[in-house]
Image 1 (cartoon, rainbow, N blue to C red):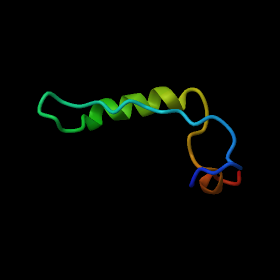
Image 2: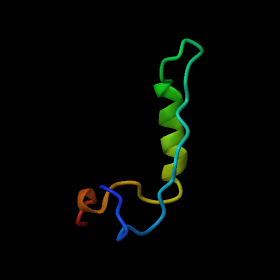
Image 3: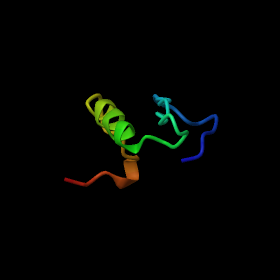
Length: 51
């Protein structure tokens, strides 16, 4: 979703965890996403289920 002047809501900016080698630490990133998921639905509105 591109940001524009019409955009509204909260857009969290998540830190990117890195390993000492400089690679992205995907295991830690997954934990971070689970933590953020506790505070609300992170899926774009058009991808949410209609249930």
